[in-house]
Image (cartoon, rainbow, N blue to C red; front, side, top):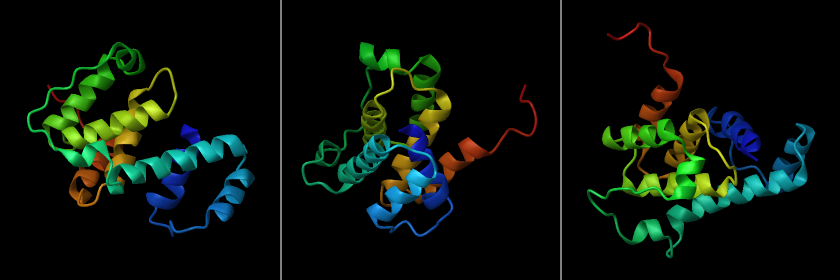
Length: 157
């Protein structure tokens, strides 16, 4: 499913293509690209649920915006995200790329991937996808893009 999400993000969203494609047309394109129907439907559902996190009146992330919240990871979250990934989440929150609300959206979408282990690269892409879908997060989205695509040009000592 994650491969489909990456395909959609790179071919439609990241390249600023027309993202308002009919679901049947999109499904046909993904089938031609070699993806199977059950995984396509899971990926489309994942994206729909991401959109619902922002726009649903019942979204737990829109009810309150806690300030200075501390995230305690559950055992299952620690198994899914290694220390490097959890540290990266803390880092992007500390530098203002995400806040406690978008962090929880990221955690929600990571859990929905239904993968036992999430690598750092996959985590970065999920953060980017979440930020793309949060209105008013254009600057943070740009910062996250820089973290993904900009390779350090020289070693820091």
